[in-house]
Image 1: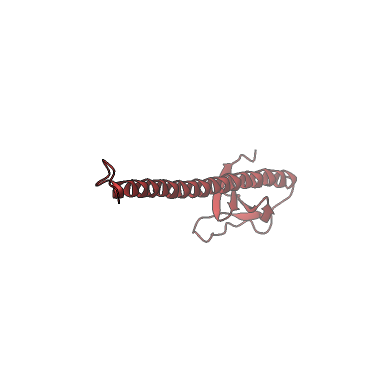
Image 2: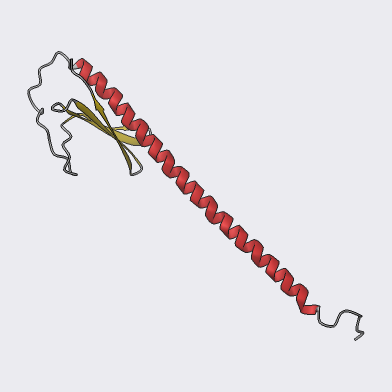
Length: 136
């Protein structure tokens, strides 16, 4: 075998350099994939939060319409405040669970405090809106 000048100790260095470059590119690719999935997950959660808020707003709008239509009626049953599962007083359920656009909402009216409580839920994300009103 003929020896070339400057060839004595460099045979393994190129292989090591190629391995380091491939390893570095692989690590960068793995980090980018993890980052992509984190962004995808967070955007999905934000979408569910926004959807739950809009569902809750739709419940408030529907409750106002229901209360306007009931304005002349006299309340007889179901007016007592009921305790919810979390211990808070929500009042009478005026709109039952209503599915809409990938989620659902339900609305309560607390006559004692003149408050509409609307709960919107989308994929387990819950948003609650409370609206105080004046009956006069």
